[in-house]
Image 1 (cartoon, one colour):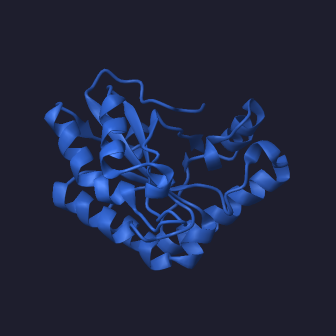
Image 2 (cartoon, helix red, strand yellow):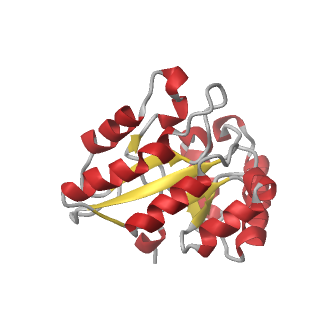
Length: 206
């Protein structure tokens, strides 16, 4: 099982945020989600949880599910089964230590890279991998030709029932921009204008 869009006819969107390196946008993202009273799902690496435990704790304390995004963000297609299992367990331990809750069963492959065997290994470990319907490309930053407007346009242009939106909480390492955090309010407003409401990925699981 590997999910890239929620199978639903309901006019809903799942906002998701990956956290692996920088925490620069966490406070802004949490403030915006709270202001609009919108749920979201976060995927953090074990390294991020160890480096920024207060941020991961704040995400969880605000009621947002925190999923496993591996321990050190390797490409699983170039990784042995034993190492994948180690990545999963190390991240799970660090995330649960920070939040007091299991990350399982929520998982996202680093880079979205996976083979059928990788999916099998992750499923066997008790996780459901979630990909995405649209990547905002906000992580490319202003130096990569992106903007608040382009982030908003990508999300709204791909809007469909069950859309899973990939965003990031970190800053671009070259220009320091946090476009996803900056665009979040206008993304939410644009989706609501089109009649969409918001769900977490955990709400889809048994």
